[in-house]
Image 1 (tube, rainbow, N blue to C red):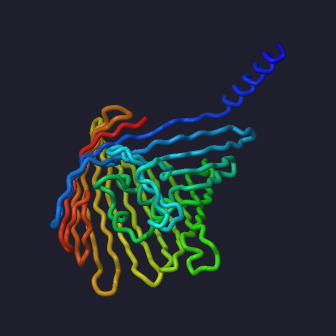
Image 2: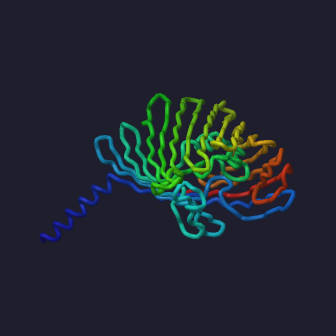
Image 3: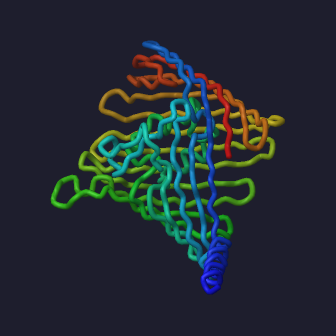
Length: 350
């Protein structure tokens, strides 16, 4: 009898604990037929993430009372065309810390947070502040063949999109539209070597979103013996009702090295159950002598079959000048020649 009462008490306590927390399984499966043509070679492939990045994730939150909560987020990139996991950089230093490409790694995001009226403190692998303006203010969301050239040609290095070993802080909501974040990330090298600070960085982002307006700017510096990389960008969006127009400017500066600058202007136009996406982006690298530049136009359409399923197609063309040789969808093109790419795909989210 006593054992039964104890068991019931344990179950009741467990139920109360579970009522205060929640865990969600989520993901995206995006399959893309991609074709690219260049002056040297063409490529045809079944790939993924032409509209949204394919992923599998788990997230959860626990109410700690008194306005506090704890949360976690584990999100893995998935190559659904071949079943492998996506690569990740474990130390913010590029290929030297890359793993994956066969096993599932939580490369997209792997964080634990403490949330309250003060905002959010977030620890782990996460998106960098300098990346947000490139993706939020790109009509193609930095996915697929339409991805802005300010990202494709970027000199921002391994932390252009994400950083491992980061400590982040986010301002609380309800600040009259103002938002912001700060992030410090570490390369985790031993002391006593010239490269002891490689992969360390600090980044900041601040913005304002209210009604039809959303604007933000970001700055970061990542340390490397070969030359610290400073990134600065700003972007904005205005919702006209009949269309959303957006633009951003991006600058990447390698100390004692090259500097890259570029911009994007584009828009989203609702059409029935779908949306037209269009953008022009350009990026130039300032070097001694020639200044390679790539200009890109992209046009796409997304047709929503439901809230979770969509069909899409995108066309893009990049033109290269002054020695640039950017190409699309795996094609190879010679310097100063053009490249064209097409995406056709289906995306399902859950």
